[in-house]
Length: 384
Image: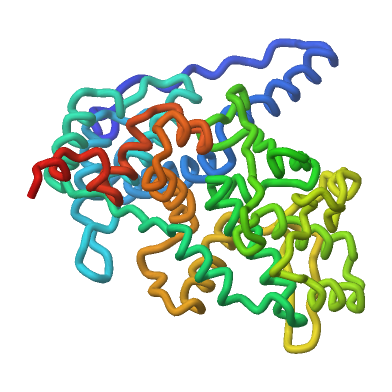
């Protein structure tokens, strides 16, 4: 008996002849296949596909059965991943990545009608042991507080052409991450018609389906508030950027808008006057944060939106331009900064959860304990 047959957990499903079905049922089958593709997000599908390719390659090298796989085969695969090292001599894959790969293996088996070998106690126990062995504090991005945000935005060239075009867009992205507490994927996915100008609150943003709410069933309205000063007014920044979009690439109009920015004055209609843009300018399903191209003499705003990864890279670049070390920062630093700054200013956990759409108070407390340890701490009441 061969090694692969000994380690076969279950027999593969017996193939059956396709039953005779009519044209209507064939169309419904196409619809059902399409619906099935929406079960998982595109990123998850890509991750699972990569996990399966890697596992299948491992099995091929060692003459093992990949489908259906025996739990012992998966244990060997986990052990193999645990001893692989990167160029710096550290673990090549984190425990989280290993768990994600096991999820990909499980998904492939269940979709094929086979038993899930990763659910075996021998596999789950092995992963728990590896997690304990490697137990370490997760590396979280440092928060960007309000002073940091202002430093980053102030360092941009706002009133010159063509650099001011990118500065206008990047300022909006920064405020969306800090004041709106949006994830980078959420900010990148916004369209103009997701925004609603609100005379009292500033701007209402309907985020829609997100990483934490994929079926779009939770409340999703985010408020981008007026600022007490033009320099801290996220709504003014939004008006300036949308005004450039409305100019539709007209170089002369774009230059006029940049030179007449009046950054020391509100342009959002907060004081009762008209803003640079109106609700009619937001009645479009086109991306809010769009890709830009510029050289020394010309700037072009493309029709396609930016990606979340591009926003992450942009912010790190802007942080470096502001004279700060970008090594420990990322776009998530803005969301973390929202929590930390709000808590330092006396916001309650409930208020922060509502702003950031967190479902658990424990998630907010993680940021609080990490970056604001003196708050609500009895050590401050010892009378020392």
